[in-house]
Image 1 (tube, rainbow, N blue to C red):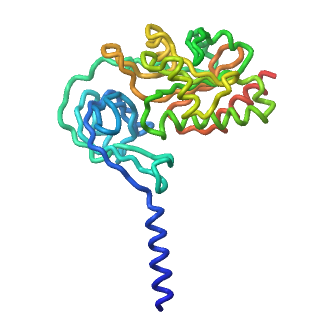
Image 2 (image 1 turned 120 degrees about the horizontal axis):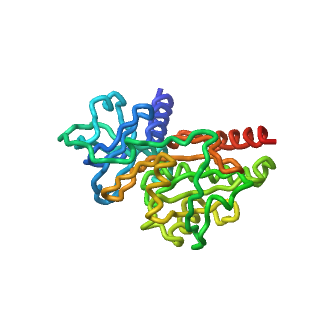
Image 3 (image 1 turned 30 degrees about the vertical axis):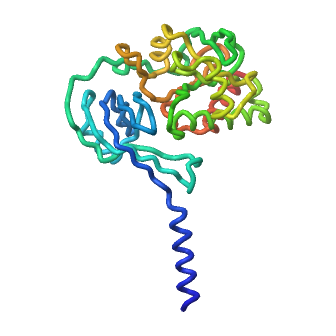
Amino acid sequence: MAFIFTSALFFSSCHRSQTPAAKRYPFTGRIVTIDTHDQTAAIDGDTIPGFMEAMTMTYRIKPPSMLSQLAPGDSITAELVVMHQGNDDNSAPDSWLENIKITGHAPPAHHAAANFHIPEPGEDVPDFSFTNQNGKRISLKQYRGKFLLVTFIYTRCPFPDFCPRVSSHFVEIQQKMETNPALAGTHLLSVSFDPAHDTPKVLRDYAFTVAHTRDFSRWEFVAPNSRDLPRIANFFALTVNPEGGMLTHNLSTAIISPDGKIVKWYRGSDWRSSDLIKDATDALAGRS
């Protein structure tokens, strides 16, 4: 009996040690847009001392039924939950808002999100220009003849399940590019939507520390000119607040064909590297 009790105690202890560790932060902000399809809301959040500065970004809402009670312009309080899957802070966490309470109502500010342009397959992509991690000016036109995989990043994003997750998917694609002949004519482009902060040095540091790459021959990190940002954001379905120059932290990824047309556009971060690889190789096979 003693052995059974000890074993059970050991199992229980091990089981508890595997329980994900949740950190909770008091949260206040204002609703910008609501996406019932993704069960998320873009929120202009206030500073969370010791965790993140004030910024507008997209948050998952729990329970999703709460979305039906929210409207753009609402002021809210909530708990931001950051759930680590292991016992250390280096594991990739999940995050969401819960215990949401509406504290006020106001007319929503004008946001470009109200007139989203959704990239459609076959649509020509404008020849947008950027500055890359080496300070070199580049444009999308120079990648004609290659499949271009484009995603958007926020280098100061504190949530590994948002921008860093997308960058980790690109890491996997870059690794497959070394061994998959079908990806030989593919180039990766991570575009910052924070050009005032993301200088070439910041982009290089992000590539080294978050994206874990130093091979810029096939994966570049770029930022647009601030005056070009609204047009780029509109085309790729990113949300912009023209009054304050603040971008909501939604996510957008696209495959662009060698002739400069949209092959496929992905909303959010719930896609896998294998999805982009399959769509790119299928498109290449169709072109051949």
